[in-house]
Length: 67
Image (tube, rainbow, N blue to C red; front, side):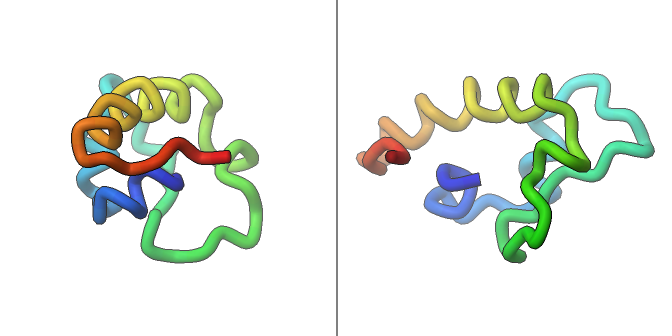
């Protein structure tokens, strides 16, 4: 979620990056603070896919890695 916030992406933008998203799966909204970590209501595989797509985009924009 760090990179999605830094890249000013919306929940809709993130959903478009995920293939085969089930209707019951809700993509975390980077604009809203999460009371519960995204891993509790979104599969880890989806977070891995987003991370793989957002990391190169962040590097191109000069966004430092999350620590």
